[in-house]
Image 1: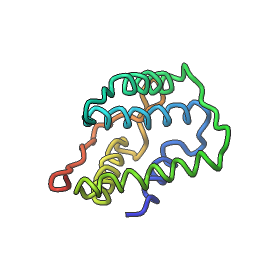
Image 2: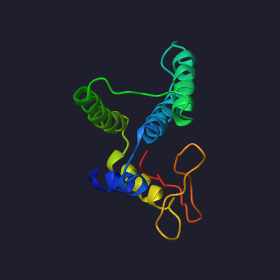
Image 3: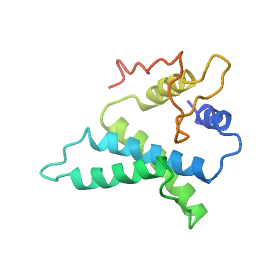
Image 4: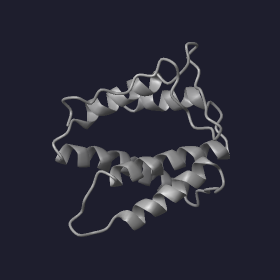
Length: 142
């Protein structure tokens, strides 16, 4: 699956994103990293400090009580693209099926929209689950 459908989902949700939309989406990204950290145990390393710091950062960005500015757009885009590639690589190396998982998660995300195909936002501008929401079924992919 290409990332075109994911980008289309975001374009429909926010056709003209503003700074607060960027903050919220960046907060959502860090929130997903926190969720990944919660699934890991790395030898004797305590991930609590990193996890808690990222959780606080994500919470403030989503609430727009912190403002993130990109200081180098080229490097930001490179890092964002690298994160997609390395996340797929990590899932592959863990004997998972990341391409199909992304497809199913994207299909689930489209179900967050209302019956008219419009996103429903929470008070912080995060897209929330609509009345037709169906969680992704990742059975058989991990």
